[in-house]
Image (cartoon, rainbow, N blue to C red; front, side, top):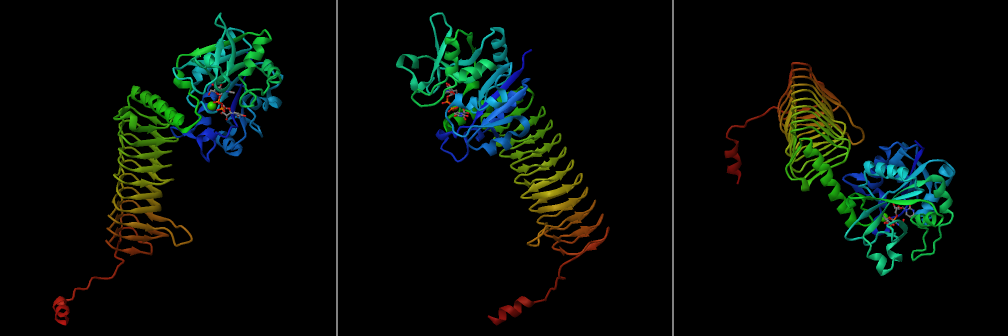
Length: 457
Ligand code: UD1
Ligand code: CA
């Protein structure tokens, strides 16, 4: 098999987005568009992936990292000019080059693979991926001759009324014979309405040079949607959302209301887990089987074990075990580690804390920078006082400890195994195992004092 290269075009500003964020970095289902494209391209066997960067170059580079090499396009003079920037890396090499736009986030690797095959089978020098749509406004049109062969591509802005009636569009994805591509690029001019060097012109140039040029039409226009503004962005989001949710449901995940459930592409969910409406699952999140998640729950970068229930809560960057019960209205902040059968109840905030098996913080607590053992009960309103205004300190609560309601554990402090902390205590010193600590003023009852007060008035 000949060598394969890929060029991802990602240098444009995306003026039509009217945004500070560069276009290809806008997320679709929680992942930047260009990352979607790069991930799909990475699924193919490609010898070298080159991304053309310009606007937001550093951000795009740090987003894709090692997945790609990079060429800088300092001025954005058009898509042909963009591909030209890969000259130093690719020119003269034998093989096939896939060119794909960073703003077509829904394109699938299977479709690109079929484009490669079609290109190779037809022995073409250029193959354009096309699609049919009832509303082709804005897209380049595929102009075919009387025999049905592709002649050229005309941009919407340059097209005649007749050409604008064509409903077969250029998806912006192509395969080229690499050497023929770089030769043809030298002949692309910018004599058009936009004064840009158009990559689609390569098709006509190669055709006129007597080379074989073909088109491969996909039957799924939705997949090739180009995102130029926020309306298209929301369409892409909707299409991808449906695609992702459908896949999960086919795999046995229960999604009560798929239109109002937002699951990122890389999220994994086990069967018989039920996702309630208003739930947003993102990043590298894995949820095992038989869980109940939501409604209105936001989870990012978490690992969640079997049979866990998380209702109306937020959890980020944490590991949560099996049979755990969280919420309603709990907040699990990053670097928390919650073992099996733990209960984190209403209005409890956990930050950078570990909870051993079976422990409970059922109501109104803040537990930050803490190591909580197993079978610990943290009473309502108790908190770890982890911050002195400058530094953070650790609270250790060993196994089987009982923390009475409304206690303050002033860190650094350790509550030894099996100890009891009386309600309302402010604990500033370590408590030995099995002890009872009472760290508050003793109650004084003044008999009939109310009468005395009443007399004064
Ligand atoms: C392009 C195609 C059009 C096709 C459509 C499919 C051209 C001239 N037109 O139009 O035929 O129907 O895509 O979505 O190619 N970019 C650069 N450098 C540049 C210009 C663009 O890197 O100098 C990048 C952009 O960041 C973007 C991609 O190329 O990711 C496409 O550019 P865009 O301006 O969106 O092209 P369209 O007008 O959508
Ligand atoms: Ca575009």
